[in-house]
Image 1 (tube, helix red, strand yellow):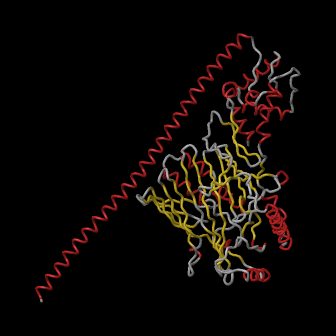
Image 2 (cartoon, rainbow, N blue to C red):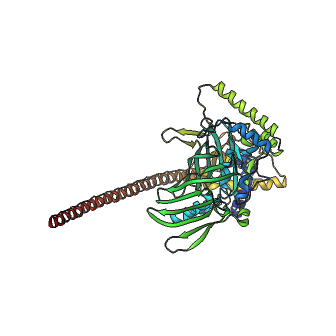
Length: 579
C-alpha cells in the first residue's frame, strides 16, 4: 500500500522527477555526495520501519436474526454447566470464574473489539459532512455497522491475559489511506482492555477502555461493557463520546440458551450539542421472532428532536425526519453492504510478538477449531497458570502497560503515542505502525523545497523490478554522518558564488518559515480563545434558561396559592350563608 501510494504521487509529476534524476546524474558525474544508493536508503526508511501486514484469509460471519444467537447444548456439556452453576450465587461477578471451552469463541476479546472498523470508511465520509446533523447520522451508521458480525451460537471470546496486545489495520481504497487498530490488556483484576484507532489522513481517531463485568442471575447472566470510546474528528476538533450495550444470555437452567443485546447507549458531541439516544431491546416473554434484536431511539440537537430511529441492529434500520416526516433507510447490512466491508490486514503469525493475541492463543484456537475440548481446556489452563505464576512473582508491584497510561483524574486509559494533529498534505507523507506505535512520516523542510521523497521511493521500486541497483560512489561522503533530514536532501558541489546564493536563500526561507510558524501559533491561540468564549456563552445561556424556568415556576406557584385562597374564602362565605 505504501509503495502504491508513493508511485501514484511520483507519476503525477513525471517531469519534475526527470529533472531531479538529471540533477542527480550531474551531481554524481561532478563527484557530488548524492549517489543512487544513498537515495534508495532514504526511500527504504519507511518500508524498513513499518510493520508488514497481510490480508486476513478467512472471516467467519453469523446469520441475521435469532438463528445465529441460539445454542443447543449437548448432554455432556450440560453436565459441565451444572457443575459450574453449583459454584455460583445470584448477583455474583463471573470475572474470576473459569468457563468451559465449548462456549468460547476462538479469538481474544481484543480481537472482537475490532469488529467496529470493517466499515471505517463511513467515518472518513462523516468528517467531510458539513452539517453537524449529517455527521451525527453518519457516526450512528458506522456505530450500527459493528454489530451484525456475530459468531454462530452462544460464544464468548477469550479473556485477554495481562499485557496481551492485538494490532491490525484496514486499507481504504477510495481515499488511499489506512485505519490502524491497537489494543492492549492493561489490567487483569479488574479486567480492562484499552484501545486506540487512528487514520490521520482521513481525519479521525478513537480511544477508550472497556471494563468487562459479568453478573449471574440464576437462569440468565449479563456481560456488561463498562466504559466509553472517544471519537475525535481531527480537522473539526469535535469529540463524540460513545457508550456500549450489554450482552444478555438467558435459558441457562431451562429453556433455549439465547444471546441478546440490551440497554441504552448514547453518542454525544458537546461542541455541536448533537446527541443520539438508542435503546437495545430484549425480546419480551411473549414476543415473536420479529421482536428479536429491536432498537429504537432519536437524534437531538439541544432539546429539539430532529429524527427518530427504529429497526433491528442486525438488519434494516429506518430513520424518520421529525419536521418533514420523510423516511430513509439509515442502515441495512444486506449482501451489497457486506461486499463493501474493508479487508482486514493482520500481522503474520511468525512475525508476531510472544504476547500478541493470535500467537498467544494459537494452540487453544487450533484445539477449539478441531473440536478437541480436552486439548483446548489443557492449553487454556497452561496460559492461565502462567499468568497466576507471573502475578505471584510480581507480588505487590504495579503492572506498567506498554502502550497505554492511566489518567488518575478521569480514571481513563490513554494511548501513549496518540497524535491528534490534523493531517498536513504539504508536510505529511504516510502513516504507519511499528511495534505498536502508530506514527507519521513527514517531509523535512529541504525535502519540501527541493526533494520529493515519494518520487524517489517510486524510482526505487522501478529499479527493484528491473534488478538494476548501481553501487554507491567510491568517493568519501559526509552525508552519511548527518541526521535524517540533512541526508534526505544531499547538497551537490557547486562553485562558491552559487553556494553563497544558496545560503542567502536558505536564510530568507528560514526567516519566512519562522514568521509563518509564529502566525500559525497566534491563529491557533485565537481559535482556542474563540472556542472557550463560545463554550462559556453556551453554558451561560443554559444557566439563564434554567433560572428563568425556576422563576416562572415560582410565580406560577404563587398564582396557584392566590386562587386557592380565593376558593377557600368563597367556600367559607357559602357555608356562612347557608348556616
